[in-house]
Image 1 (cartoon, rainbow, N blue to C red):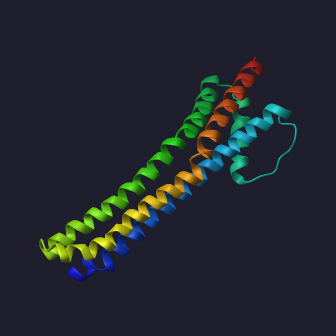
Image 2: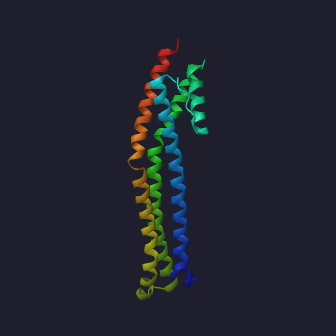
Image 3: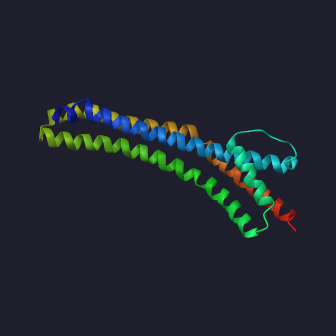
Length: 183
């Protein structure tokens, strides 16, 4: 146990967990941003050309197109309003999701360092010389957590607010036009 805690074993395990969390956050944020972009582009194109041009795209875009068509032709205005509100809520959840993933990565990095120090103290006693060896390894979890947090922030930090704002404006304009066209 002492070799695992004071050597690369615990550090490697912590780094693997932090890397997996980073990949999960990256996949989640990329997917949600892709959906927000698709919705924004589709509604913007409908506003510009009235949906006249047939645009081919992904299954996700087809689903958005079908939802928009269903909202436009809905006989129940409450359902249509609920669907539009659902779009808005999903778009607004993207910014808190980015904050969640970046904070989680920072916290996991710090937790890995503190956990490594605590376990090293428990295993080695209070011998400072024995503690400093594992400390140099445990710092890597903080480095990984902070690095991945910075990477997520740099990849999505500027894009997310811009796309969420554009999406909100397109939803509002599209909804205003839809309400004006509905008898």
